[in-house]
Image (cartoon, rainbow, N blue to C red; front, side):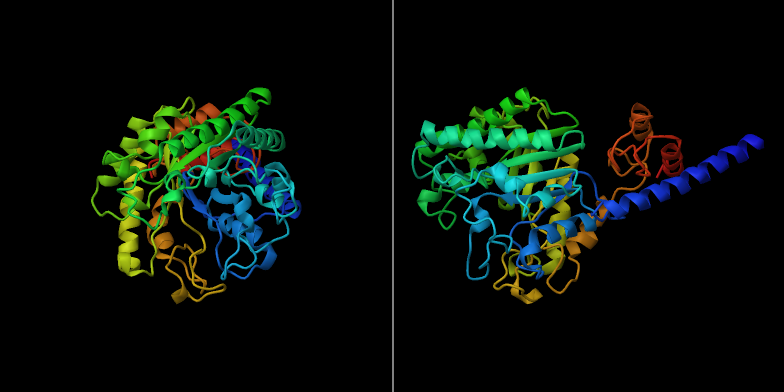
Length: 450
């Protein structure tokens, strides 16, 4: 009896001290942590939304919104595209032109800026960076179908990505975070840009051979830069990967020239992302899985991820458009796609996006947008979030995020018992106090079997 009360008292005191510690940390730690937490494979894009009206703080505040919603993964843009303007976006991609023009800067300098660094410091588990060299003469994705990529241009590309990778390795050492440098944006479109695509008969128009060769050089140059940086500066307590994005897999499956058929077999990307709109709107239960399997068949295995190095880098379902007949159909199609993706075993799934970037005006109403959103201009929550993502919430003890607390979670827990690290550093730190200990074990046991 004495031992029981002694242990009980110790547990209560530890909880009190833990609460005090978290309170003190919160005074100095400027980020909010959501009580809700989604499956560690789920992420959200934050690229060029036209609302809310956050002014020149848009990038930071909208990224914080993603964190507040419970997502640990985010996709953002760090490229010359930051400075692109339009009638509905007069102040650039993130409503802030303070870095523009970026041609006299490097990727590293943009990342270090007062505009970007606070966003990179937000406590996301995985951050997907749509990255491109800033130097106007460097090889870049927009030149792939236009002109040959000379060695001088490739060298400039390599230098920027090497230096950026080294900076990330040094800056985020021992943070247990992952950065995925995504290049390029939808490679199939870049290979067909000189054909007037995507506004073309893209299923039947094929890229020029020099565009295919350019694409291979471009991707391998970036992969070489990242690999060399990791050899020169070991990744300690964090990870950096190269993600290569394609978008016309079905075209390849039909035997046509495409990135999946003609580029990827000659590359060695760590991860292969699919911008999956071409297949996502199908309603059958196998097309999406077949798409994933085809990419695996064509692309070399990753030294890090093996054959499961294919993920969904982008897909979304416009709730307002007639194409999928409103919210109900959007929910059904999102459910189908996510179920096939998770059953297949994708390491990541990124949804497009938190705030719609295709509205017809800045600061729109709900009816001004096609509906690529998780939050609407009115502040209402998308049904994709409430009806689909809600199925992928993590709960205490589900360490491997398979929606069950079972012997596999127990085995993971035992392997990490006694370890210490940053707040919420690994799933085994269930109560998120920085230590995997008996109190985490109690939470695991309480939820065992759920």
